[in-house]
Image (cartoon, rainbow over all chains, first blue to last red; front, top):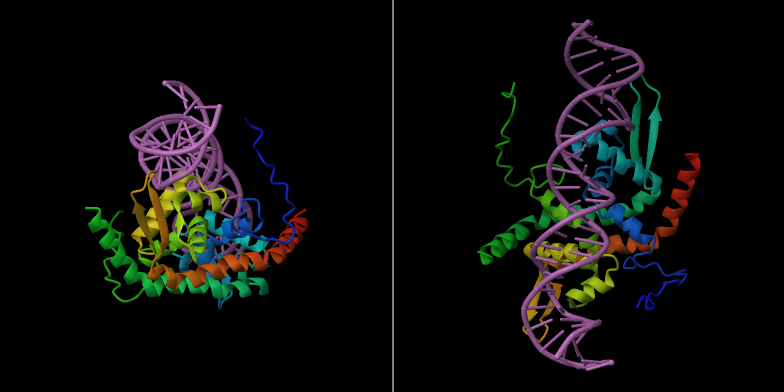
Length: 132
Length: 132
DNA sequence: GGGAGTGGTATCAAAAAGAAACCACGTATC
DNA sequence: GATACGTGGTTTCTTTTTGATACCACTCCC
């Protein structure tokens, strides 16, 4: 009864499809579908920002997760990390061109959250009330 | 030494700011900054879809997480859940007007992932090569 | 020499995600 | 008439991820 398994050995060559489990775009969506990554990218939209400044600005992020997400974003070619050999070392993060092509979509999301918050709260109250 | 705790009793009335830890928009970004939520919303963009259809289409999501995310999206007023008392019960999910105002931002992200995937892979290879 | 600021990493507990089983119901299959 | 399947979930358990905290080397300030 295990004979029904299909290896899904299709090469998937030119079809990028976020719905497919084995599609590489899923890995991108894993990265982008993360509130911290969205906030970091949004914060870098217009500024070059240092590590501890990001940590201070993005209230609630832990140092561990911040360095982790930054490392991934850097690996994806979205941001650049520049180290200056100053006395306490200075590290600056900024958007790379590829990241800039993404920033519009990202800020759409964060901006949507800010502009539609009141409607969401209203819906939540309605929902909670209907559930008792 | 506990005297330094500030209650943060500021009313924060009209300032919605995703960077602030205690801002309600953070809760929205928590929801939206989730790959499964993005995929579900994207899938509902043009269709009314049933539970198990979503589960089949969005490859890799578990039943538990699917029902969980759907419940949250419904609570936020983004999607509607309609139950038909058919023989095996039929449940349909679809976007509500509020969700439709969001869908452009969401599909921007998923579409970005699909169109820029090759550049990301290139960046990843470069990064990995530089690290060894 | 005590404290602060630089940019992280290491450690450990708590929370979340994933895998799998289970549920009631009815229908089709054998 | 027992078995398996499909419906839309919930429950349980394990594994992964997160968050909090401490720690690191280094230097400046007083």
